[in-house]
Picture 1: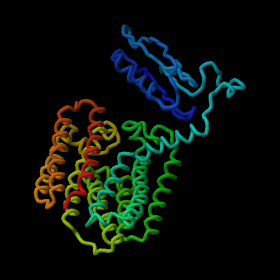
Picture 2: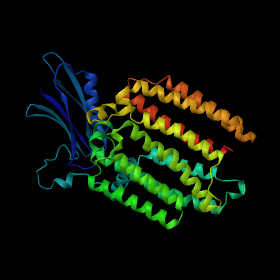
Picture 3: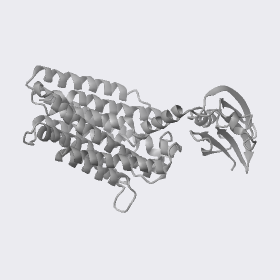
Picture 4: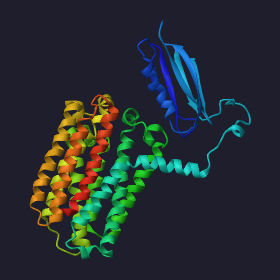
Length: 415
């Protein structure tokens, strides 16, 4: 069978990723446009104009390829070894690759552009939705430890910063380590991530996660808070066990073990570790379980299970290829989708019941009205999702993270 190979340009002019597609009469114009999307959405060039080329896919069928011309790049079509090859590079179309003086015709990036590109890749490498979730969680739980408005002082904010910075470095370590061991899977499921796309070399990824882990632990030790240091160490161990591909580890292969890891970090470590850091280390009170802490831990346990289930819904294709037996692979993403919706709705119902017992009118209103509003929004959104569309499912997964953020805005009102 002949194949169409599409090469995508990335930040490096000599690096590309080849994607092979069957060349047969079954390929539709819509599918062809998806092939070309890999070029038209690639990072590294600016579209100036488009050219059209038609090629027979079968005896009778043909389709049009609308290819971009980059202001400092090249798009070409050639046939080699039985493959139809669509190429895009970062070299001008009118410059011979082997010609002397080629560099004089190439538009080079400035140092500022290179730095901005690297920071953009770091932003994607850090998985910002998880960073935001961690930051909001730490701030919310820290506020939950306050016993009166007068404790909202400089001491509180210093303690908050002491917890926040090392925790965000640990977050980068955990998500970065997962990308290192999932690079082949991410080429299928998340090709926009820096390691999967080739923007970062494997050495760069290893350096970032190593430095992040060392900085996190060093800062935690320097602060001198035992709850904070224990929270960081437990997160390090569980994050490593989740991703590292060695015997007895790589727990993400097991749906139950993966869910347990996420639940332990998001629901227990974040709530208790940072609550006790603020309660005992910052304010010098005896570490003890309180009603707000118990509610936060129980509620976030529900949410963490939902995140553990929902995160694999868009990734079924790659997970099947690489033997990741997630709940979505085993039960089907449609069943998991509605299970997630009903778990969140059950958690909101319990939260409204707890809100009735709140002794403060502002706390009661926040808990009841806030969760009722979130439940209505969730139900409306869930019924509008096209479960046949990976894009729609991915969007709904990110919407679950937004609900997660919203909960942390309500939690400080629990009393």
